[in-house]
Image (cartoon, rainbow, N blue to C red):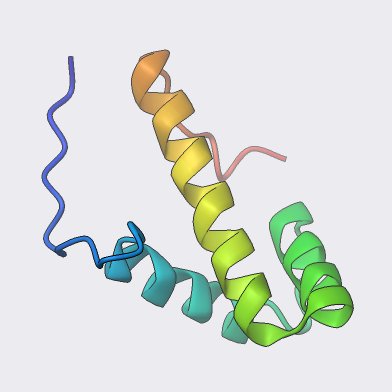
Length: 80
């Protein structure tokens, strides 16, 4: 089992601030990129607005991380 230590404290609403800050960074860097996550994030931002897109990206990142940890897998981000 992999131990994960979060450096950020959860807020009252249950969101982890570090995850939301990372999602903001993803949205800012997504413009002009063609990878699936960037295209999805920009589409959510166009439909729902910036702040809801930040929460959606943070939630998606949390789900991907949970799946990777629970299935003991790793990311092949460099793979096509």
